Image (cartoon, rainbow, N blue to C red; front, top):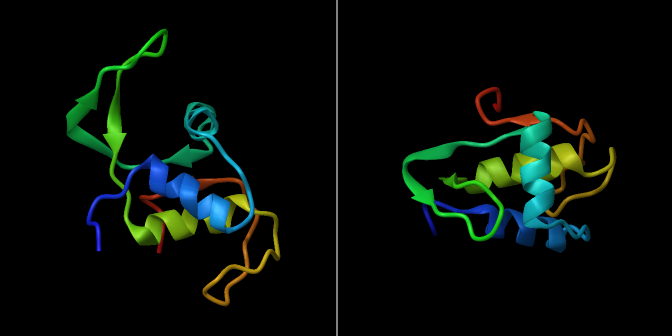
Length: 96
């Protein structure tokens, strides 16, 4: 198992659930304050083009499942026999 997953893995999890999202969607949700993900304190990527440089997000499989559960419409069945909550907000610090 990969210890540190990134936004790419989060996008793949949304695609498996039937929803297409992009890296810019993830960044917009972070900018709005709807999505709070852990970031590396030492690993920064230099942005290409007009974007500002930012820290690499380090996710776990539990965080990815929590984000997908929070952002899919309420009642959507997920692979682990759980249903999405549809809150549209996720903070990794408050996750159970």
